[in-house]
Image 1: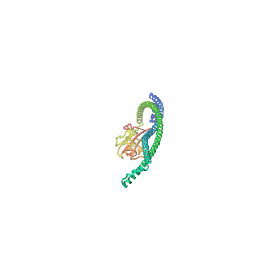
Image 2: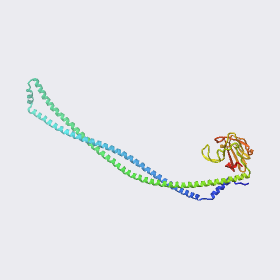
Image 3: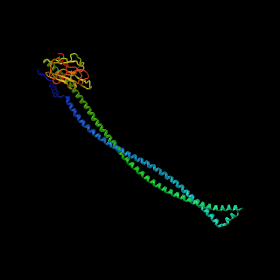
Image 4: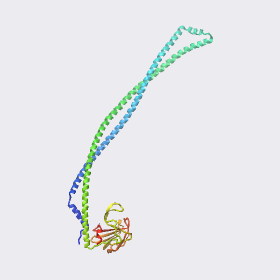
Length: 413
């Protein structure tokens, strides 16, 4: 009897789905076109915003440079002001010292003039009186000792007058030198003060120019920052639209995936029912492969893998049993595989004809060889935990036309 294989059913399913385009498919295509256009617009907006941001950062870097320069100039201005204050104080002190020195010099000159006039008057008197004056002083002595004393007094007076005159003259010279030195220092301070004022004015002019430059740059910074904000808002708007469209696409695709999965499940159930009918027609009956143990620890279909922890499709059923428990052939057939098979460990595969095969995996020992013909119920292997396994059990599969199917509907007839 001819039968429709799983692969043919799958191809038929694909053809049926492709031959009836839905409104959702058209909507999805339109939404994807919109999404692509929005993506291009968003990318252009992002590129423009990034360029504007680079421009803004460049302006801000220039502002920082100008601020640094201004701080340096302001520091120099502060130093110049301090130096100017010191010069002004030194100039004022010099002016005061010069005033006092000039007063002292004038007074010294007056004293010298008076003393000189007195000395000259004394000389004139002595000259006019001649030696009589001295002799009168000396002859009035009452004794020789008094004579000597009077003589020494006369000599001392003459020496004192002469010394006083010389000292006053020396003091006048020193005061004149001091006044000259102070006048020179005063001129120097005045020159220095003028130079410092010129330098300070130049520094203040530079700072004023930098302030004008900084003001213009601050204006540019604010303007570019506003432009950047608008461009980021535009970019965000495109992104929001993209997110909304992506959400719509995801919802449509999820609905389509659910409908497709439901359709595949429906076709699979119909195929399994047809296969069961065909199986009954050619009288292929499958026995339970572990007669002494009936519990199924992991059924056919989606499950969480006990080792990897990932969600995956389980292509058979797991029947736990102690190591060494007898495994029998589920139906008559010919052994096609007997040996290690990757993660299955020790494995036996039996061909039952009409596109059906059974697989027995994780065996501790295989008791048949390739090419051997077996009958339903023959002892073909022992339960084990070889390959990728968490404990002793039989992993059993029924394979129809190369695809594993749920074994449970095939037992009990």
